[in-house]
Image 1: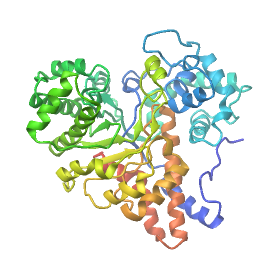
Image 2 (image 1 turned 180 degrees about the vertical axis):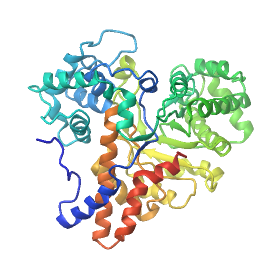
Image 3 (image 1 turned 120 degrees about the vertical axis):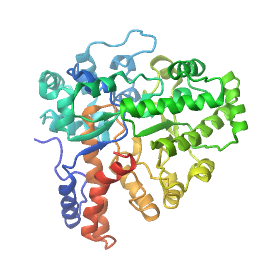
Length: 469
C-alpha cells in the first residue's frame, strides 16, 4: 500500500483534475533549483553517510521537533543540542521511537506529506510510521544509509538537483565550499551571504563579530567607510570561493533607511558603542538593507529580505538551545512604509533583484503584490515556512496573481535543513501550482498552452532568472 496518492493535491473535479495532471506530467521531472536553504555544505564536501535516521529526519528539522515540543516532548529528549554542551539524548533509536510514537500528530500537515514522500520515494517504505513500525523503519533506513547510493552526493544526483544554495554567516571561512570545489565533483552547491551577525546590533556578540570582520578583511571596522568596505570584501569572497549569487537578511521588520553619509556614520558609531536604543538598532538594520542593495548593483548579488518573523520567541529554548529551534512566530509587518526609503533609492533599477519573504501573509494582496506589480526590482518570494503548503501556496497565488502576475515572483525555494525533504517540497509546489493553473484554464482565464508555459516557468525558469543561476 502506497503512502502517497498519485493524484494528491489535484482538484476533486475530474475534468479539472485531468488538466492539472496533464500540466504536472510536463514539469514533474524537471531539475530542482534550490536557491535558498540551510543544508550543511559539509555533507557534500565529505560525502560521508548520514549517521542515522534520527539525525537525518528529526534532530535538524524544526518543522518536526517543534510539533513534538508543542505536545510536551522536551527538546533534549529529541537530541536537540544545547548551547552549553549539556546533556541531551544521544541514543538515535530512542529519539526515533519518540518521534514514531507521536507520528499521528502530523496528520494533515505539510510535514506529514513531506515525510511520507521521503519514506516512500527515497527509502521504499510503504507502511505508515507508528510505534509498531518504529524499529522496522529505523532498521530499514539505517541499512539504506550504509549504501553508497544513499550518500549525500548520490542523493543529490538522484534528486536531479541542478543547484543547491546553502546559507553561511559573513564570518564563515567557507571551508566546506572550498573543499567541494576542489574535489572535482560536478554537483553545484553554492553559498549565500548572510551578514546578520555583523549587521544586527542586537545579535549576540555583535561587537566581537565586528572585530572578527575586521580581522578577516584587513579593513578598519571602527569607521563607517571601513565597515562597508569589509562587507564588499566578504561579498567578493563569497562569490569567488562559494559561488554565491545572493545575499540574505533576516530582519525583524521590513524597515529600511536611506540616510546621508554623515548620519549613517553617526548611527554606526552609536551601534558600535553598544549604546543604541532598540529604535536605533532597527534603523541601522534598515540602513544596511539599503547599503546592501547598492552593493548588489555593483556585484550582482540578488538581495533576499526575510521579515515578518518574531524570532526565538521562547526565551528559555533560545537560551538553552540557540537559534532556529521552532519558535519563530509570524508578526505584523509594514512593507509599504518599510521599503519606501530603499525603493526611493534603487526601486527602478533594471539590473537589481530584491526578493521579499514574509510570515505575515496578510500583506501579500494588500502590500507586496501591488508593489511587485509596479517596482522593477521586486520579485515576490514564495510562501515562507508555515505557508509552503498546499493551502499556503494556493492562498499566495490567489492573493498575488491578479496584481503581480506570475512573472514578478521568484519561483519556489524549499528553505530546508532536511535534505531528503527537498524533492518532496518541490513536488508539493509543482502539484499545487498545476492545480491552480488548471483552475484558471477551466474557468476561461488562461489558455491551456499558456498554462503549460507558466507551469514550466514557475517550476524552473523564474528561480533560475531571479537568482542568476
